[in-house]
Image (cartoon, rainbow, N blue to C red; front, side):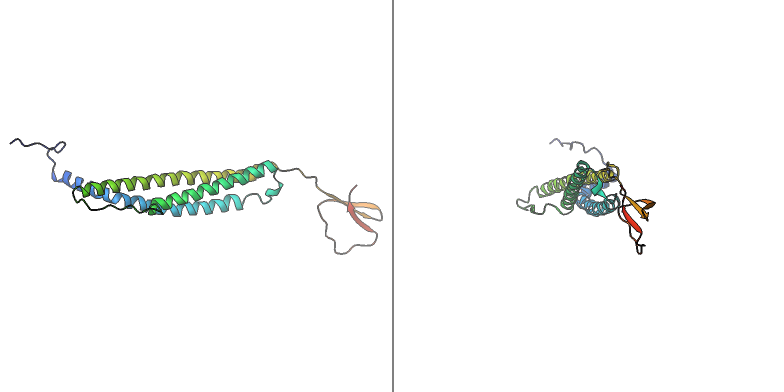
Amino acid sequence: MTRVQPIGAGNPDPLDLDAAEQLQRNDGDRLALVRARAEKWIGAIAALTTVLAGALVIKGRDDAAGMILGWRIAAAATIGVAIALLAFATYRAYRAAFGEPDALHELTPIPLTGLHRRLTRAQRVAAAAALGDLAIAIRAATAGIGLIAAAAAITWCAPTTSTTPHRVCIRVDGQLVARLVADSVSVQEMPHSTTIAPCT
């Protein structure tokens, strides 16, 4: 009887056998590794969103109402898309960390023959799906953060509607004594001969 040499077997030394065993263990640990990474990214996405929203939007120019209407709409739309992207990124990161929320994939032990192969294949498929979800989450979070920065740049740099400042004149006995540029003037006490009115 002729002995058939296994393809690719060669003459492995003990270190090669240890490496093969380690690769087999890594196959089983791959899903747990990807899920652990995804859990960290959930926190990172939330932290980055909070910090950038505070720093770039809340601390942006205080009076956005003075912006030209088209720029205001652009800023609002950009922030809306950014929020949607960050929510989507958070969902995909959660799915990468904990699996699909509406599905539970089970592997039946029957038939017992080939169970190891089926289990290994299922673990690889689950790890690849989790890694894909994590990659999409990272891309969506990056795009969302970029849009928040763009919205902040719009609020800082967009042209504003020009308003003519109000001029207030102060007269004593009909003679002009002061001209102020202000929307309002607060006076506590004023002689009867003094008038404060818009300049003509």
